[in-house]
Length: 347
Ligand code: 6MZ
Image (cartoon, rainbow, N blue to C red):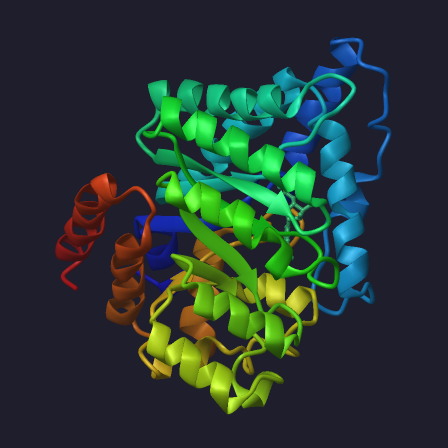
């Protein structure tokens, strides 16, 4: 079996996937048809081609954040959002994913409230789970461009849904354009959710901001996303790198996203190698599989080919990722999936 087939068939765990960044072109087309049929005023006359960003694209990191508006126009009703969730989960499962923590930022739209937004995604997850074996959970996102009141509102909703459906809602996270907002402002809000029992993950070090990165590491989140500008080689400092190594916080690594947003210049120079060589916990993830035209198996394949990892090392990456899932009750079950596959393939 060649490495890309191996990576495709390996049971994988996705821990960093933004719903609206994960919509495939076919899902977007389906949503356009659905909205037209539902008689929703067509704000979706959008150029879906503009949605995909690839390496060498001249758009800046700031420009990247504009493209999410295209997906947002298509997920503006509860029905559309439920379909988007269902189809996206279906694609992850078809790609060999056995457990996913999908994340999304609740929005008020002319057609729904934030509460209805969360309900629609959970509806999509439940419907999917009735007919499929992949296990799906939800992490609620807080956008860095929110004000305190909005962040607080989202955290309160997250806690409310978590208390009612702890089997589905597992965490809260901070994301959005890293050039906007300050982590410190969100600390009381995130802490409230954490004290209620939710796990926390933070987008950390997507741009160089040593003060904020240190504050984030010291906050001891359950995971962090990206973790680029930490080592001195990547614009970080010895102090930050030492803090990360000491913390052992698992890092959600998104190779294609980081290259396409130009946060790292190339796959070869991606900081995955540093994290891996330092034996730090990593979870290979897609970030926005629609925007960056990737898949989880493609990210594993890229990782194997770029850093010369063999099948046993790749399988070990999937296996160790099981330890970092927020729903700890499912850990053993998904570990068994990976082990069964490796045993079957003599690895
Ligand atoms: C930071 C990102 C991101 O929440 O509407 N998002 N935040 N860094 C990234 N790296 C490229 N990629 C996506 O999905 C889209 C939202 O996820 C966040 C942004 O806030 C974006 O608007 P949802 O489902």
